[in-house]
Image 1 (tube, chains in turn blue, red):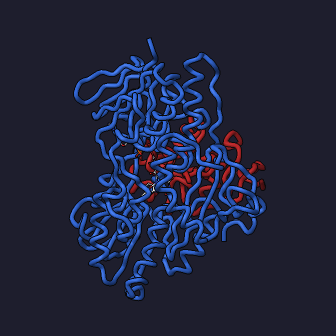
Image 2 (spheres, helix red, strand yellow):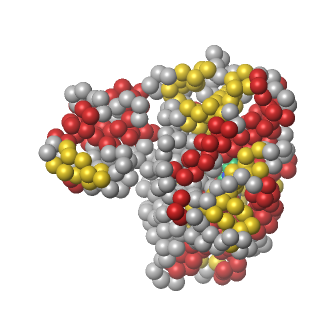
Image 3 (cartoon, rainbow over the protein chains, first blue to last red):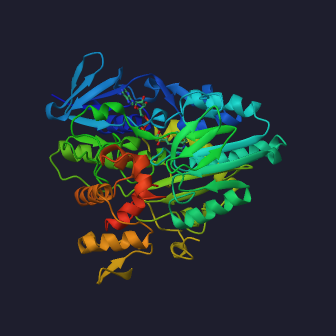
Length: 420
Length: 105
Ligand SMILES: Cc1cc2nc3c(=O)[nH]c(=O)nc-3n(C[C@H](O)[C@H](O)[C@H](O)COP(=O)(O)OP(=O)(O)OC[C@H]3O[C@@H](n4cnc5c(N)ncnc54)[C@H](O)[C@@H]3O)c2cc1C
């Protein structure tokens, strides 16, 4: 009998894992993907919806179509996993047994965990762009907005794509300049962290850019309550920030069913996962990929993509009775859109923070690291077709290895004038 | 790495004063670090948080975040801010002699 590999979640990680596994095993393994719906959203596109730079229709495609022939796609809600029985229970009562389980159910938004955020004013004065409905409503709200205080609030880490709230602030500056009303809008970026970005070198660059674009920054602000009618953010230590329009990036957690699955998750329902092999701590035949893990890496599509290689290799090792390989190194790379047809690029890992340099080839690039350029903006745009046609089908990106390379990176930038 | 002297003992600390090796920590150091950071007498509620921080660091190898503290330490977030003003997770970690909470990237 062939092995059955069950994959929970048909987003970025579930899709690329299924396609890679299908290529590896052909007919010799049964691959089942479960997701609650058939709408695959290109999430990086959410950043552009509020500014009218893309439309909801353009960034959604059917999930089933992204999966290679021979993969069994089921639309159902996962209710819980019992690793002791190698079984997934679906909400319709079906029990699905597996030989290997891959958890790819991503991160969920938990706006309800912040008092008042989804109360009165939600969708009017208070918004998010982290969901398609939210980004669409925000586009209308921005169009109506003709001056006042815009506050962008990253409530707390971890969040998907930690640079997206900064990108939103940069694009807001550009958007209001284009409309000729920038002088009437005060933009404030409010974060729970002690800087715009967690790592020193990158923080310096991004803080300088926020300053240059006249975006105020408030750090170490831990939002405890939102007054969506009066327009106030209130922190746990009782500081207040007034707003006329709030764009909140709500708290994130793992999928709810993880909490109903004994031994799988941490207190935030992220799957406890080995940071190098991607094996779950709960059981040897359970793996996790993408935003669902508790890895200290960024929750990003690029991370999910780089993890794919290690994941598939280790599933094969496990089924062959071999030792797993610890090959995932925390590699991430992200384009940071900064408006005016420009973007930055950062490339980093568990060990190495983002530094300046050239990517992917030393000196030649062509992409400059940690520096604004038009070419990086074109790179960000090119990521969309690459997502559908290279990343999801489970191919490698041309010229870009899964492991981070230090070639072309200015390592000496680290520690120079650390922090202000 | 630099060093600091707490309760008469020389310990290794990072640039922000967090102990490098939790094993070097003693309860007397906690009082001294707390005082240096503007805290008065440490109450039972402070100790509940400090002990929780240490236990979970020694168990998992990572300092718990403010959300985890609020969910599982038995002390609600609002009170954490009263006990350890400004950055409760950071300050409690410093007093508990464990490395700075890493926060993800
Ligand atoms: C605004 C925004 C901008 C971003 N920009 C970038 C970027 O520029 N570059 C980049 O690399 N990354 C970016 N990302 C991050 C990227 O989109 C994610 O990291 C990536 O999609 C993670 O893939 P995943 O498979 O882990 O999760 P997802 O793709 O979210 O898939 C999880 C799937 O699990 C399903 N699921 C969950 N629970 C259940 C259940 N109980 N039953 C059934 N199905 C379930 C969901 O329906 C979903 O389809 C961005 C994200 C956002 C929100």
